[in-house]
Image (cartoon, rainbow, N blue to C red; front, side):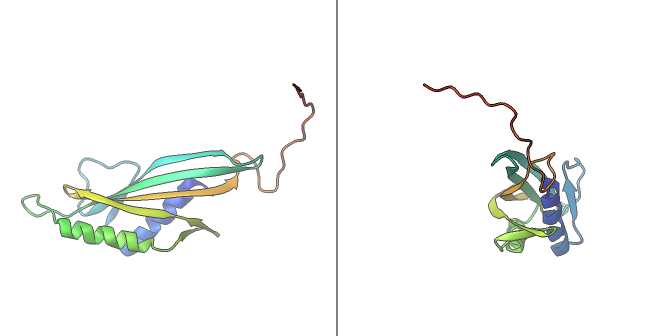
Length: 148
């Protein structure tokens, strides 16, 4: 599983609740539609867990853009409702990504002018990139030990 797979699962869940809204991914144009969403990765890295596994660290942010009226005034209440709806979509402890269930934490942060935010974060273990499932590392051919 890749972090892109997780992003796709998050986007699909949001699109299912808000089918009429555009979800911008990775970049948001200056002339974006309102109301809409902007979903982007803020962290995707891994560290060694053992010889064959890595622990992925992932976080992404969803920016919610409110609709505006003829005077470019937006509704903070509508933003808060949309933010709560998105938070409720991810109320379970895990999200299905393919045949796996990955723990996902969601947090709503304070809205700004015309925008609200939801932060997603997750950690999971996976096969080391470049290794196939079930593949083992080659045995050591030489070992050096220094005793003191």
